[in-house]
Length: 145
Image (cartoon, rainbow, N blue to C red; front, side, top):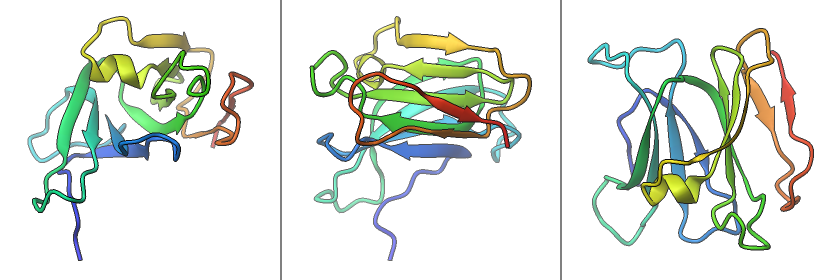
Protein backbone atom coordinates (compact mmCIF):
# COMPACT_ATOMS: atom_id res chain seq x y z
CA UNK A 1 0.00 0.00 0.00
CA UNK A 2 1.33 3.39 -1.00
CA UNK A 3 1.12 6.07 1.72
CA UNK A 4 2.85 9.01 0.04
CA UNK A 5 4.82 9.67 -3.11
CA UNK A 6 7.18 12.23 -4.59
CA UNK A 7 7.90 12.04 -8.29
CA UNK A 8 11.56 13.04 -8.46
CA UNK A 9 14.83 11.57 -9.71
CA UNK A 10 16.43 12.17 -6.36
CA UNK A 11 18.19 10.72 -3.38
CA UNK A 12 16.64 11.30 0.02
CA UNK A 13 17.22 11.52 3.74
CA UNK A 14 14.73 11.63 6.61
CA UNK A 15 15.00 14.25 9.35
CA UNK A 16 16.58 13.07 12.63
CA UNK A 17 14.36 10.90 14.85
CA UNK A 18 14.04 13.63 17.49
CA UNK A 19 12.76 16.18 14.94
CA UNK A 20 9.02 16.84 14.79
CA UNK A 21 7.29 17.16 12.40
CA UNK A 22 8.96 14.56 10.21
CA UNK A 23 10.59 15.89 7.04
CA UNK A 24 12.10 14.31 3.96
CA UNK A 25 14.98 16.01 2.15
CA UNK A 26 15.54 15.19 -1.52
CA UNK A 27 18.49 16.16 -3.68
CA UNK A 28 18.78 15.84 -7.43
CA UNK A 29 20.55 12.56 -8.09
CA UNK A 30 23.96 12.55 -9.75
CA UNK A 31 24.33 10.74 -13.06
CA UNK A 32 20.56 10.44 -13.56
CA UNK A 33 18.07 12.17 -15.84
CA UNK A 34 14.43 12.79 -15.11
CA UNK A 35 11.63 12.30 -17.63
CA UNK A 36 12.04 15.86 -18.97
CA UNK A 37 15.85 15.53 -19.38
CA UNK A 38 16.28 18.60 -17.18
CA UNK A 39 19.82 19.58 -16.18
CA UNK A 40 18.62 21.65 -13.18
CA UNK A 41 19.54 20.54 -9.67
CA UNK A 42 17.94 21.30 -6.31
CA UNK A 43 17.43 20.35 -2.69
CA UNK A 44 13.78 20.07 -1.64
CA UNK A 45 12.08 19.50 1.70
CA UNK A 46 8.73 17.82 2.28
CA UNK A 47 6.65 17.31 5.42
CA UNK A 48 5.27 13.85 6.16
CA UNK A 49 1.65 14.28 7.28
CA UNK A 50 -0.11 10.92 7.50
CA UNK A 51 -3.38 12.58 8.53
CA UNK A 52 -3.65 14.06 5.02
CA UNK A 53 -5.36 11.47 2.76
CA UNK A 54 -3.68 12.61 -0.45
CA UNK A 55 -0.56 10.82 -1.77
CA UNK A 56 1.23 14.16 -2.13
CA UNK A 57 3.67 15.45 0.46
CA UNK A 58 3.59 19.15 1.40
CA UNK A 59 6.59 21.08 0.03
CA UNK A 60 8.33 23.00 2.82
CA UNK A 61 11.17 24.63 0.95
CA UNK A 62 13.68 24.28 -1.82
CA UNK A 63 17.09 25.49 -2.88
CA UNK A 64 18.38 25.66 -6.42
CA UNK A 65 21.78 24.01 -6.48
CA UNK A 66 24.81 23.89 -8.74
CA UNK A 67 25.47 20.36 -7.47
CA UNK A 68 23.97 16.94 -8.01
CA UNK A 69 24.29 14.46 -5.18
CA UNK A 70 25.25 10.84 -4.55
CA UNK A 71 24.43 10.87 -0.83
CA UNK A 72 22.42 12.89 1.71
CA UNK A 73 22.61 12.36 5.47
CA UNK A 74 20.56 14.41 7.93
CA UNK A 75 22.21 14.52 11.35
CA UNK A 76 20.99 15.97 14.67
CA UNK A 77 23.99 18.32 15.25
CA UNK A 78 23.01 21.45 17.16
CA UNK A 79 19.45 20.36 17.97
CA UNK A 80 20.17 20.06 21.73
CA UNK A 81 21.33 23.64 22.16
CA UNK A 82 18.88 25.12 19.60
CA UNK A 83 21.73 26.52 17.47
CA UNK A 84 20.45 24.38 14.58
CA UNK A 85 16.83 23.46 15.39
CA UNK A 86 16.58 21.13 12.38
CA UNK A 87 20.08 19.66 12.60
CA UNK A 88 22.49 19.57 9.66
CA UNK A 89 22.00 18.12 6.18
CA UNK A 90 25.26 16.75 4.76
CA UNK A 91 25.51 16.23 1.01
CA UNK A 92 28.08 14.26 -0.97
CA UNK A 93 28.42 15.50 -4.52
CA UNK A 94 29.45 14.14 -7.88
CA UNK A 95 32.47 16.47 -8.11
CA UNK A 96 34.07 15.44 -4.81
CA UNK A 97 32.39 18.09 -2.69
CA UNK A 98 30.92 17.68 0.78
CA UNK A 99 28.46 20.42 1.74
CA UNK A 100 26.82 21.01 5.12
CA UNK A 101 23.46 22.76 4.86
CA UNK A 102 21.17 24.28 7.50
CA UNK A 103 17.75 22.73 6.71
CA UNK A 104 15.86 25.23 8.89
CA UNK A 105 17.26 28.13 6.86
CA UNK A 106 16.41 26.46 3.55
CA UNK A 107 12.83 25.84 4.71
CA UNK A 108 12.60 29.47 5.89
CA UNK A 109 13.69 30.68 2.44
CA UNK A 110 16.92 32.27 3.67
CA UNK A 111 19.96 32.64 1.42
CA UNK A 112 22.92 31.89 3.74
CA UNK A 113 22.18 28.17 4.04
CA UNK A 114 25.65 26.64 3.63
CA UNK A 115 27.39 25.95 6.95
CA UNK A 116 30.61 24.57 5.46
CA UNK A 117 31.88 23.18 2.17
CA UNK A 118 34.86 21.11 1.14
CA UNK A 119 36.00 20.06 -2.33
CA UNK A 120 39.16 18.18 -1.34
CA UNK A 121 37.87 14.79 -2.45
CA UNK A 122 39.33 13.66 -5.78
CA UNK A 123 36.28 11.68 -6.91
CA UNK A 124 32.54 11.49 -6.31
CA UNK A 125 31.44 11.28 -2.66
CA UNK A 126 29.21 8.22 -2.73
CA UNK A 127 29.05 7.44 0.99
CA UNK A 128 28.68 9.56 4.13
CA UNK A 129 27.79 8.62 7.66
CA UNK A 130 27.12 10.40 10.96
CA UNK A 131 26.58 9.22 14.49
CA UNK A 132 22.83 9.75 15.04
CA UNK A 133 23.37 9.84 18.82
CA UNK A 134 25.96 12.63 18.72
CA UNK A 135 24.14 15.97 18.72
CA UNK A 136 27.19 18.18 19.15
CA UNK A 137 29.59 18.81 16.25
CA UNK A 138 32.32 16.27 15.94
CA UNK A 139 34.03 14.32 13.25
CA UNK A 140 32.19 13.67 10.01
CA UNK A 141 33.45 10.58 8.25
CA UNK A 142 33.44 10.48 4.48
CA UNK A 143 34.35 7.50 2.38
CA UNK A 144 35.14 6.96 -1.24
CA UNK A 145 33.44 3.89 -2.62
